[in-house]
Amino acid sequence: MGLTIQMLGTGSAFAKHYYNNNALLDSGEGKLLIDCGTTASLALHQMGVPLPDIDAILITHIHADHVGGLEEFGFQMNILHRRKPLLYIAEPLIHPLWEHTLKGGMSQQGMIDKLEDVFEVNVITPGVSTTLVPGIQIELIPTQHIPGKHSYSLFINDRLFYSADMVFDPDLLHHLVHERGCRSILHEVQLQGAGEVHTTLDELLSLPTPLQEQIHLMHYSDDMEQFRDKAGIMSFLEQQRVYPLADLERAE
Ligand SMILES: Nc1ccn([C@@H]2O[C@@H]3COP(=O)(O)O[C@H]3[C@H]2O)c(=O)n1
Ligand SMILES: [Zn+2]
Ligand SMILES: [Zn+2]
Image (cartoon, rainbow, N blue to C red; front, side, top):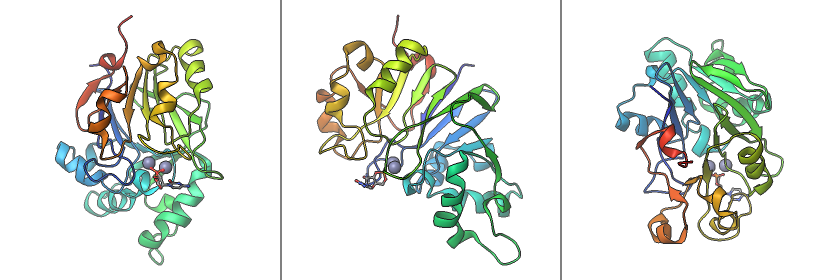
């Protein structure tokens, strides 16, 4: 079986019709969860995926729609399943994830006082393609989102670019497609307004046609249906649909 990708949700941080923009990659040999937002455990429940079936979690950046479900995930796995989930994370995210996000809910005197007490923490180095679960290699690519906050997009199996929340970076997209063999792009999109911390639909529409053909849109707001015919040849990913990676790639 080839790699499949299933979005737990495709919504922006404020969406109510769509769950948080988190993804489940399945190589057939292992499952990797990309981000674990506030709605992750409910979405996984609806998808029929028990938490212990997930082999590892990878975090792109610290916002609730990407890490807000880690407390429940960690507690469920530790308390109900007696296992520490494997957490892949870039080193600069460890301190803010524990001190600013999880510690308030998870710390427990004499038992839990650091991230490693709940998760099996594996640090991954940006710029280095690393096998996280069998059949899934990820390279973290630092991308800009919020000034002063670290955020990492993903290059998966040397062929799929998965944007974290990020401002428009056309040079990176050109580089990946023309020099790195990238064959499809899952890109966050902000449908209306100025893209101060996100990439707008208008910015993506400014890309050359062959690049747009590779782009599938995610992390969109509740009014997405009004934009279906305004996105040109770019398509909107559907939450919880299982996409074989090959189906996301443009026919040559
Ligand atoms: N400077 C900021 C910071 C945050 N935000 C909004 O808050 C959301 C947090 O999650 P997100 O998915 O990164 O989207 C962010 C913006 O909608 C924003 O619009 N501008
Ligand atoms: Zn987000
Ligand atoms: Zn964000």
